[in-house]
Length: 357
Image (tube, rainbow, N blue to C red; front, side, top):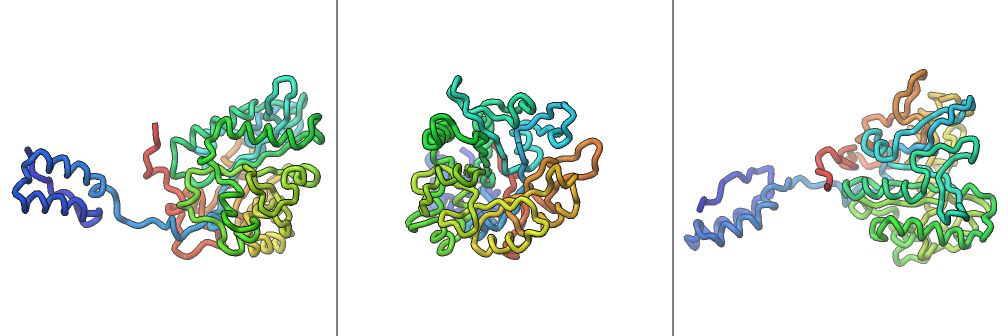
């Protein structure tokens, strides 16, 4: 039987390994089979880097991430310029484009009893994942393989003006569809943020957003709705108890946690007010009306908004415009909120973390 090999270095956690080695040596059992077993038990401690992470210091609001608008979209090639863009499949966006936020447009199909994902029926219908549950399955599969990823935000827009069975049943079906794919433990919900506090706002004011350790590998669903659609889901309940989804709220709503401020140009005061209120802010770096204005992109990056949404996450033919986050990996430290010790690698570093099969 071989003796313990002396390969633990000062860059690794050595104590458990040396305790096992020394105990066996003192008892003159270092060639005994039981000592070899003891060595194997302590081997993970020897080979795991001891360098501390910042997962207990950095929090969710310290990030800035890139997302895609109409993330499922395929150009209809019908001459309508605002619709002339095509996104990669969701897995490719996650794996290769650094996307950590999706937006999906939903239509309930009474005939098939399912949610379909598309932009405009009959005119702009093409989708990378035509069925909502297919989109979810793709995201869940990637998430399961990369358990240390930053949270993935999934914004959901109910496109119907008034579902025939009413909004309550619509949202029951929506949450059931989510839970048909994702385990509850794979989600970060309003209850997870609120904990013992009476409201989301009280939780944010007292505790703020959770640490990265608490939210790694999670998915957050956000209803991109307002007015009657939002009221039907929130019931104006400050706690949002038992809900799976957050909603895009107004800054002073009692259930506010996430807000959308589409244009960063001219809305800097609103973004700053939302940040001071401890809210996650989603803004858009571009829109069809702006013709990919680089000033708008610069304003979005500098605003401190946490989520930068775009139709152009990678270079495209015919334009020099592309949305990239400076020094991102794929996220970057929020330029206004992140502490000095923050680094992009501390936020997420999947390259050094083996994926699960």
